[in-house]
Length: 613
Ligand SMILES: [Zn+2]
Image 1 (cartoon, rainbow, N blue to C red):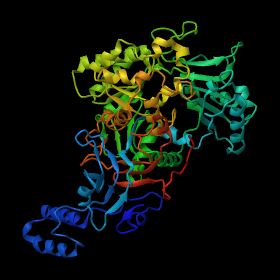
Image 2 (cartoon, rainbow, N blue to C red; image 1 turned 180 degrees about the horizontal axis):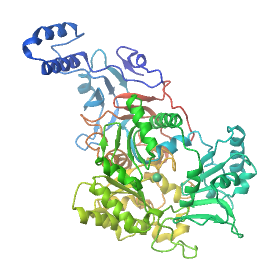
Image 3 (cartoon, rainbow, N blue to C red; image 1 turned 120 degrees about the vertical axis):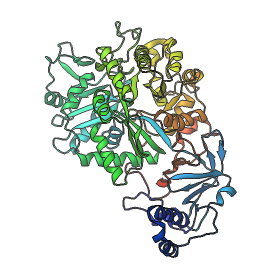
């Protein structure tokens, strides 16, 4: 139940799109004072006395006796987990405009109540800062909401059936994409081939990707459209998988996927706007209020900019375009975290290697039983000196570096390059990041800390990859896989995220993964390398303050602190006291971004698309 004054303040402000503008604008008193100051500053005092008087008469409800303005929103009777060490817990929060103005006891915050304040009774539920996903692919994630869903296909037959059904309804010429298939669930776990697809979708181009994003499988039509034949050579950093006769099987690894990416028709601007709206609505429904979009297309940023101008952004976005475009941003002269509270740029995303699931993560020692395969450095690392040049250029321009590195040698090589950057340009607050930081060499934890590199990690990958990693790389290397505890023990900062669309966007699944390390196959109920578990408090901190720090925004968001942006999430249950295995069942009750209600589980502010988990 909610107490509202007036009763329908919140609903009355619902915008036509179905989201909610948190009406009650700043109290008339404050607004009035601001207007007066503005006019006094602008006008010559000689002329303005009469105007001031007139304005005072026109201002409704101006309360001269009131010592402080009334809040627009109060969330009261909550268990507030602030992630602010100066006041770790509280009962209530007051919001004025888009910012938090007070955090305290129910009685303290009641003093902020005015006639137009929307008051939400949280009934003792847990209120936390909005989750900030430090690593997403927001547009492909949004596309995935409507793509064919192959992740749960338990057999190749089911995989083919789902694609066949989609082919029947797909408009002519439209590609079937995405899918996130996972052959490790099949028996035997063979990568699918074009024949499987040709049987169900002969006339529809199909290129469906593995859940880790490092491999895809195309049907014959798609291969033909992309011009891939037995004669096509493997590109650097990629593999066209071939049968015994040398013919492509349809499977394309890493850089070989570029052939397909170049062939698939690009999204139209309207399609992109629709996808972003869909992604934002879904993000709100799972309590994600900020995302850091790794390697967006420029067209994605253009879509964000348009939605920003229209006042439609309800997710805060930090976009890190591909490092191969370093010249563009360096030319503009914009530095790290350039922009406003809803949209920032100023970071670059690089790739050092592939993924462990595709056996393309780059290791010092070979994968087990793989004929000496140590994985692949990405094509942009050939030669490494070119990557160093790009990083130097980016750093000289004040741009932040976020580098995907998964295998231990890939991580080590990036630390070498980061050390070169620091040596060349001197110490600075540059917040270098390694994305994933999945398999650490024992010798590199100290170096990671000394270089102040942020480990931008995705705990859900640990419970997913934990199913098979040990059989790929053995026990010793697995003990340093997603080594969250070892990172913290070495003083390395963590930023949490999901890598959506690779893993689910839902932060509660990520918190569940970080605190249980219970692999998805149910084989490690007490945790896979349990010594690396995080506590709930640590996971939430890394997901809010940690991610905010990773985008230079720790003074603006990441905790429930007066003065910060009012990005708040009310949860159905108290994850701090709940049995860890139940955290994955917890739901978001309400989400506010900048004090604006963007999701309410009990009202008609629902995501455009709901996906099961
Ligand atoms: Zn990613």
